[in-house]
Length: 166
Image 1 (cartoon, rainbow, N blue to C red):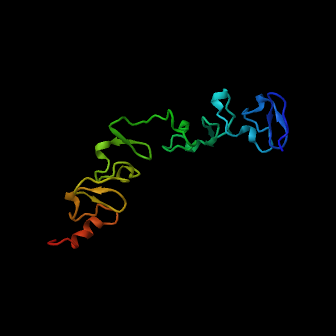
Image 2: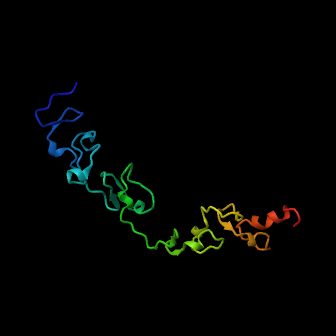
């Protein structure tokens, strides 16, 4: 049974009554923390501090700094604050390698590794007539069966033995 709190006071699940100033103030005043649940801190003009090395999301959630600007929404539903204002060191005609540098988009998925980490040749959708290697890179037609392994596992040369007339 819920005790009756006076006018303007908020019920705490363990039986306490809290003044509105303690609701969503960044400090759990109720033992179960219910006075800090479902808070949208910017609306109230206050955001609780996060521990050192953590980022404070718009919703008030704290996430590790390593998750900020990683290309994924880590703050939660409809809160993209960890991906806002990240900027990109690359211009619109460039692809950002996972390890940092930029390469021209025309070099992405062209069968040549231009990023030091090879990220420009991963997760590719190959052009018509090109071969998709098992690791994800694309090999242009004139590099298939040319006597050089362009796929990491050499499949671009192994298939030549299976092609009729080769």
